Length: 266
Length: 259
Image (cartoon, chains in turn brown, red):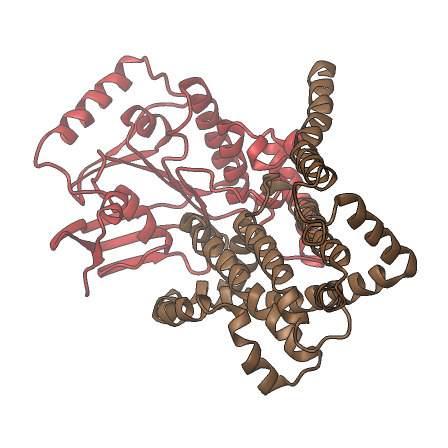
C-alpha cells in the first residue's frame, strides 16, 4: 500500500516536470535566438523583455484590470452558452427526431466561424458588452451543446429502461439517469466550449473594447510595444490552461464517479 | 400477494423484412406467492414474455392481467446500476427525495442487510464485483416490497458457486415475503431448482408446463431432479428451430409489427 502510494506520489512531480520541459526548451531556444541575434528583436522580443513588460503591467495594475475584464466576459458568455446548450441538448435527447431534423441546420451554423459574425453582431447589438458576450456565446455554444447531446444520446438505453422499471418519470430519467451518466462527454464538451470561448476573446475585444486582454494586445500593437503584445498573448495562453484545469478539477469534484481523464484539450 | 395472467399473448417483430413471432399465443398463470420459472433456448421468446408481463412492453394482441395495484420489481440480466450513485443511492433510486427518502432509509438499510451488502453502501458500482453488483440490483428490486418480481436471467453472468448462493438467498427472501416471481432462465437446472412450476417455451409457444414436485432444498444431483431435467431437455430439443430473441431481433434492426 505504502509502496503504491509512494510511486503514485512520485509520478505526479515527474508528470509536472515532463509537462514543463517543452516550455523550458522553447523559452531557452527563444532566448538564444534573441541573444545571438538570429532574429530581429523588434519582431520577436526576448522572453526576458516580455517578462519585464508583463511584470510592469502587473505592478501597475494594468494586467489585473485586463485579465478581470476578459475573464468576466468569457465566464459570462460561457455561462449563457451553457444555460442555452444544456436545455437544448436535453430537449434533443427527449425528441431525437427533432435533433435529426435539425441536424443539417446545426451543422451549417456550427461551421460559421463566430468571427465572421462580428459585423452582424455590431449591427444588431451595438458596440457595447452585448456584442462581445454574444460572440463568446456563439463560440462556446456548439461544443457545449454537442458534448451534452452526444453524452445524453450515448447513455445505454437499458439504463433508461431500468429507470422506468423503478417508476421514474421521463423527467426523472433525464435528470437522475441520463444527465449523470453522460458526465464524461458533457464535461469534455463544456471544457471545449470554455476553450473556444477563450479563443474567441481577442475577436470579441476587437469590437471597440476599452479593456481586456484582446484590447491590450491591439492597443500595444498600435503603440509599437511588441513586448506587451507578446505578454498579452502569453497571458491568454496561460489563463486558458488555468481555466481548463480549474474546469476539470471542478468536474472531478462534482462527479467523482466519472473518473474524468486528466487529458489536455485540443 | 399478487398474481398474473397472460391470455393468448402475441408479440411480433420485423427483422430484415421478415416477421418474427416472439410470442405466439401464450397462456400463462402465475399464482399468489408462486415462483414460475420460464425456461427455453435463446430466441424462444422468454425475455419478451417477461417484458410484456411486467409492462415494459406492450402486446400486439391478447391480454396481460396483474392483480390490481400490485407493485412490481424487475431484475435484469445485467445489474444496470447507475455509475453516478453509490450502492445505497442505486437501491434507493425512485424512492423519492427529502422526507420521502428519509422514510425509506430504513427499508434501504434492511435491503442492504438482507443481501449482505451493507458494507458496500458507500461504494460506487465501478468498485463492485459482478456478484455484489447483481445483489445490489436485487436489493433495488426488493426494497419496495414488490408483490410481483420479474427476473430476467439474473444470475447468468455469475460463476456456479456464486449463482447457487444467490439462488438460495433469493428463494429464502421470496419464501419470507410471499412475493410471486416470474423467473426467466435458459438453464434447465436453475429453472427446476428455483421454480415451483416450470414452463418450457419454444418458438414463442408454451411447449410444456410442469409442477416441480421436489421438496426444498432441492438436490440437483438427486435422481428425481435428473429425471425431470432430462425430460424437459427432451421437450425443448424437439421441434422447429427457435425464432430470434427480442435482443437478437433488436440488434438485427427490427421494426415493430403494427397491430
